[in-house]
Length: 138
Image 1 (cartoon, rainbow, N blue to C red):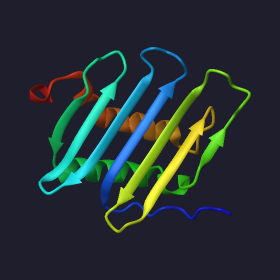
Image 2: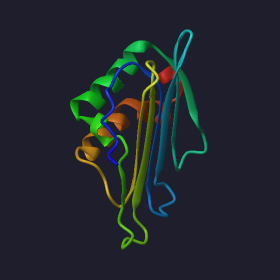
Image 3: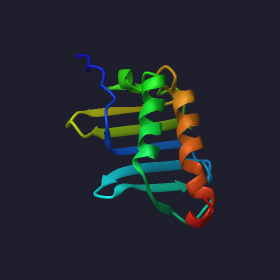
């Protein structure tokens, strides 16, 4: 049974993980969660022992939503790609809960949905400044 595409609306919570095989510096974890005052952001990149947390405003979440819309990530809902022939590949997980109660769930191992690279690179541009600097420097 096909999972219907998710409509990208106001994000309540987003979690994204991208991992490159067994490479010691190859994992990125990003999340945002809506709070009473805006959003709580968590950003971590392997190679750093520190997980960076920050308060961000709704504008940050709107940029994430716009990125997901631009590359039609809603069509990924239910994606579960897997290339078992690859023994040490790349994998990802994306889970988004929206304010209207709907969700977007996608994951893959050595297989990726259309526009995955653009979305991953866009999320990195938004989140990585928080993983590479202290909150005061961002």
